[in-house]
Amino acid sequence: MASSDRGAAAGAADIRTALGDLAAGPPALGRIVYHTPDPAWDYRDPEGGGWTPREIVAHLADLEFNLHWPARVARILYEDEPELCPAEADWRALEHRHRHQDPRVALGAYTLARRHLVAVLAVAPAAAWERTGIHPESGRRTLLQVAQGFARHDRRHCERLRALLAAATQAP
Image (cartoon, rainbow, N blue to C red):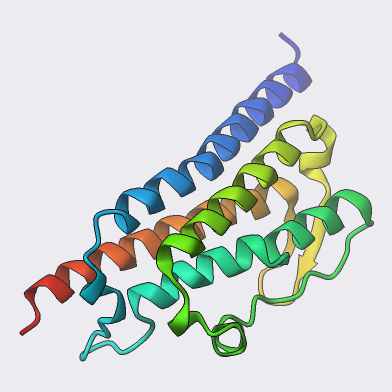
């Protein structure tokens, strides 16, 4: 096998892994959402502050459904090295009223939008995964790196949700 073939095979495996990781987000979040009692949604960690579980789920849906993640992907696919805007998560949380959203509705929006994103990426040609965009904080990123970043973002928030919800069930 030529070295270029080995590189392409490794790239294909990375793409399959990224698609699988992206597809795993909605079921992972769903397991959390549907096993959370309503009073826990508004728990705020007295030590760490930060967002409530309700706000975290709304944040995930907002990035996915309100065009932030899909816009990054579309720009990388159709523009040459576009500048990618930062998420501005705190502003979006206020502007989009994350603390008032129903987590089950947010989960539905997130799931629908993520399935669409995975479907779009699944048919992207292998060369598209090497196209780049430029993020003001993290620099030049390939489409593959961006997709891997979305999946890491999901995992971090799911871990934070689990920790918050565990603390909420032990709070007085």
